[in-house]
Amino acid sequence: MNIITILDGGMGKELRRIGAPFRQPEWSALALLEAPDQVTEAHRNFIAAGAEVIITNTYAVVPFHIGAERFEARGRELVELAARLARKATADADRPVRVAGSLPPVFGSYVPDDFEPDAAPDRWRILIESQIPHVDLWIGETISSTTEARVLLETLAAVAPADKPVWLAFTLDDTPGHEDATLRSGEPVSAIIDLLAAHPSAGIEAVLFNCSQPEVIRPALDALRALRPDLPLGAYANAFAEHHVESDDYAANTSVLERRDDLTADRYADLAAGWVEAGATIIGGCCDVYPEHIAALTARFAG
View (spheres, one colour):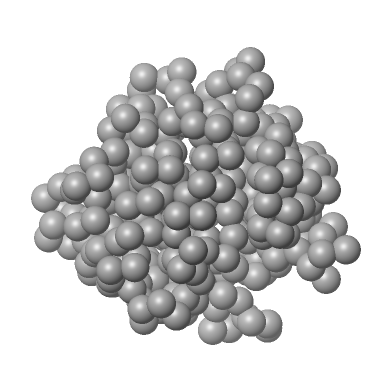
């Protein structure tokens, strides 16, 4: 059996669970502004649950969440703080824990048509440069299209030393009734293979699927594995109760979707077992996936 690496879960909702300041539009960035010690606490909760890789709390440190003016004035400071807090949280762990530097969508999640390839590099540059001293690897998160992934890879190549591996995490079309394994751009997941072929020296160590309903992940993993059996794969799903694409309020960054009642820790681990069968060797959770879910993954798959 392959060795399984356990990721952490959803930082934003874990911050809310432990009582940290949390709301839209700032999402998880609000705790960086008002309660940074609770960011460290949330990281430690996931480490205690078994996470072997934690992801920096930089996902919402973008103009879409904190506003263009605040990003311009304090973006570097907040990103560096988030990376430093993640590294601090690993210091007391009883085992090695790696830190992944989150490189999020810089024009909003799930909206490939809003991506601006000419403007994105300047925003990602701030996120990359401010995290370099503190992280062990990079993870591009919730990527909606191969164009977004390509620009991110080109920015990393221009800005970051080539000494840290890169994980690319794509988000899938999980519209109810949609059965094909496609990215939110409508591209088939096979387009990822073409992207990898075009960037052989980008340091891409793994391809993952994230921030999608867990049921759509297995077909996407199967599709990639059929095309590239040697490609390291991973997955970390969300547990939103309401389908976010159907919610105008969510798209406008004014509401917080709640958690599915049926997605218990054991049920989540059952679904993750399917990902492992499909070849995933990196598993964890995204929005509304808590330390209890990560503990269930650890109990079933770690070691």
